[in-house]
Length: 325
Ligand code: BDR
Ligand code: CA
Image (cartoon, rainbow, N blue to C red; front, side, top):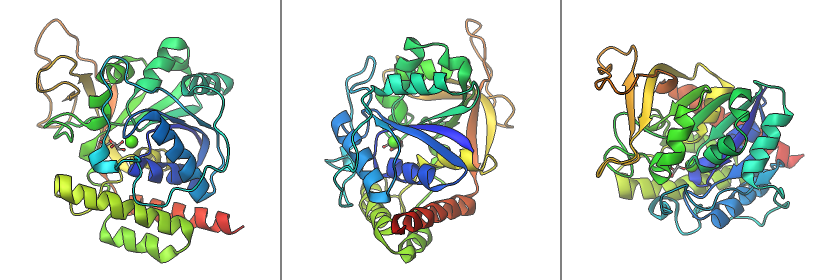
């Protein structure tokens, strides 16, 4: 079993990531931490609790940073709505928040478990992760892996090149990429392959029951937003891809790359600048002599869409069966 702390900003695809993590027997979900991103910290934290209530999930939920390290706060209301999780009925929380700040929850949990056993899965801006590293640097050598949703090497979704999670808190993201731990970058190049296609939506709806209805309503809302804003036929289930990789490490291919976050560009702030080591046609000269190329990040490239869809369906089935118990 892979131990996971899911750091998120629910968020429609975050909701599916929570359900996949809680609904797959290969994942030991140690806790959910929240960060301001898709909406304010109050809203995304409340949404995390509502997702747990809707799906019968009982794990600690700790509220985290309310704003990026340096930048002013930006939310994604055009995609996720006024609540941050518009569409499904959001049930009252079934339990209270963990009393700790998310940063302390992350530190305590990583330090309490054996070294090299806890995976961090940040699927929102990286604010909590950067703060935790700064407060307790020993977590860096203890964490097994960081599988983050963010960045892109072909296109952005906030600006032509910048992806939302990195754009919102670029300083935090750069700190996470620079730290000496194993990072997998699950960017838009990968997550745009993980679509809630009509077929996947039909499979989930066919399960029936409250979890299936919740997920159906999630995809109805975010599907309409993605059609309107990006002209996508189906909405990407971005964040769930990180959990999928911990369930099945062969679900996508990766290549090692040097990833830098642009912190100063007039048009490019928040862009991940990705230099692949050994992908034919995608290796760039490291250019200037003043910086050393550092191929330390595994960048996700090609998703097995069928296996991803099967994982999501399986998790909804298991959560549905658990609710009935
Ligand atoms: C990322 O931004 C958020 O809106 C999603 O939840 C996902 O984490 C995609 O760019
Ligand atoms: Ca997210």
